[in-house]
Length: 410
Image (cartoon, rainbow, N blue to C red; front, side, top):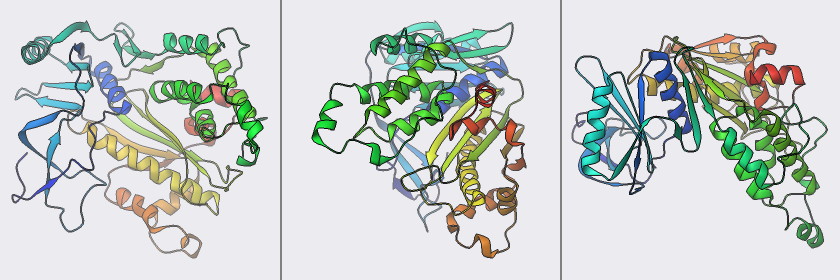
């Protein structure tokens, strides 16, 4: 890109070149939808946050624009992790790099091989051929069915063996309603705290968090809950962690499925109301699907206390919109996404998002959350109603019955 008026800002302090799991899932969804080839390479000499010797400038990303300096650009001093190259004939190549793991996707296998040869001239690399595994995630591609699967079955089984849960009794949902959570339940005496020293609570939670982040949104709610007590867990919390492992023992073969020719970005959002017993904050949850599969999800406490279901759902919709528009801008570089839509099961929150006139019942809602109206007015996305039972994001913020949970996971 060209320099804007010759004005440059240093971007090194606020940008870390970390590729999100969303990037990997979106690219692999595109690979399957467009029938692209995807090859893998391994860098023998790993490098992280590599310094650049060339002068490269980039536009200020959303959320990092400096007020009054919107026409400035950033000088990039650290290497990025996702690279694109467009060719004059409409072809393109995508390169994903995380430390020493590399995926290269494109239509023309000869161009991919040419890039691999060029990289090998500058770095010591291993050519691993067709992509089979990335960051411990197995990639299984069924070209006949036009499906691509991401699996962590072997990793899950390894975790279960490590914590002695590989022969535990199986349960059918990731979290049950009889578990209660609040800080007063945490150990308060030295004797109680010492009794937990021998329990590998933090290690187990960390191992399960990696599963949730990569391929298993169905344990998001449970992991959000147990991770709150990492500094001072109680045996009750450890029972919840073991419950999650019991659930994974019976579902370790579940795979994240991608595969659909319709390049649509659809976000599902939902919230509970005052679910936290400690401070009565609500939980926002969203899930974004692309090319037929889930590519982004989040379960997170809201920063303020919602006074109504409408406000809680409205805040959740704003958070989902941010992720949706980030993915929209990401996709715009190399794909023609047909439709971008956010669905919500609360009609009042939808009306509040679409109607800008001031209302006394909404005056307590922080101004920053009304940003969603600008996105809708600018036609960047659509906001639609969905029936509660059809909302797949329900499992991200509350305990569900087996039938609804099974539907959300499917």
